[in-house]
Image 1: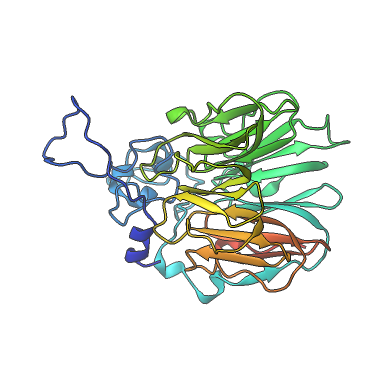
Image 2: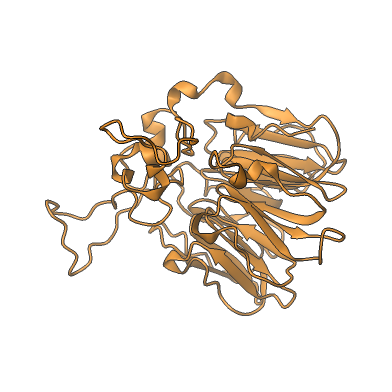
Length: 381
């Protein structure tokens, strides 16, 4: 990925100078230094717009996300010798990009009913409720290998950054119980007790909706990311440390980290469904029609096609939707092919990860497209 694209991928924001906050050697407002907030050294985003992300940015040298991957300059040993030399950033070095990293890949068997694309991995549910996960493990610790998945039967699944969660189905356990696995960063793998009907995962946090419509959230707690609105929530989704929901009156509400691009300021109106990307959101109107989007639009991700969609799913810099004729359409960043979906109709399930997307058709076939580093967009058999 070129430096110019990395810069375009970054957060385009300037923080407001606060009274009483002294910046040494700085005479005007500017972007924050990378790593000031929890998770900023492992999210694949360029917080300070210097074309360096995560552990490649010197600002992250002291971050817990990077210390385990670095040896001291004096040649001292790495604290955890089983960590691979290559860091686990969301965006790899340009030299690793090859022509086989993008494109559309299809499953070899028609056994799938749902899919959840995350930042660097994907999990999917078979028709019998069993799961399979594929892509990159968050660390070399086998106890944190999110691609191992879980045994049993599951009725819903979600994927975040290095972790996934699923709702149990009989006979795996009491229906609606949440189980999470993968990297336990910011307690993202410690869901609440109780039974739930749906869930959604962000980069480092999750939320689930119970039978009364109330949301319970867990994981990274900064900027009130796990403090959702109360009341009867009809639909919801999570992004980079923020979330948005549809309330009982069909209006939108967002909460969590304000990225100063309008991400937590949704439009007025009545809506039937909402989805959230890394730094933007889109919603489908209550009366079928064109989606409405808000937030970061630097790559065209908040400019959907002017046509009716029945489902949407958003990634880091792209979005995809299912048309009323069950064909697929995508928009926004396409440098990895993530906005170039397969042809054909019959698609009923859709999920967009950071730089790839997957869909399942009515016959159980799965297709994934976009970035395939670590085979995150290669469906298993």
